[in-house]
Amino acid sequence: MNDTPSLAEVRAAEEARRQAMLQNDPVALAPLVCDELIYTHSSGLKDSKGSWLKRMTSGALRYERVDFVDLAFTVVEQTALVTGRMDASLLRAGQPGTVSSIYLAVWVKRASHWQLLAIQGTPAPSPA
Image (cartoon, rainbow, N blue to C red):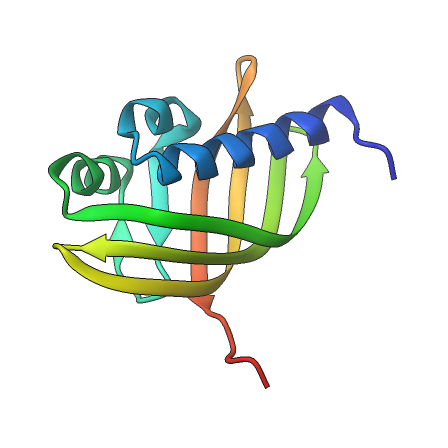
């Protein structure tokens, strides 16, 4: 299936989010995220836009590797759903850790660009 313009834009926005996380760049991440962001991590921790970016800025959260795999995209008018798997290595308060989660991201088109409104992660099942 060929990408529609909106689908291609959402794909690009999701990749820009991954790159900003990988670069630990809250300045690049901020315009990709709605002010109303609701981020529920696979650990159960909840973040707003402000708290997520603050944790990155303060060094409390530092991504070392971020992979998005098995992505699927659905665009309906001005809303896009992205499902996939995130595998990441990170530092939380200086302590190394890994994340393997299945996630649903909700993107909305505002003005001329897409922004992340919500993301919900759940722990990925262990490989069989």
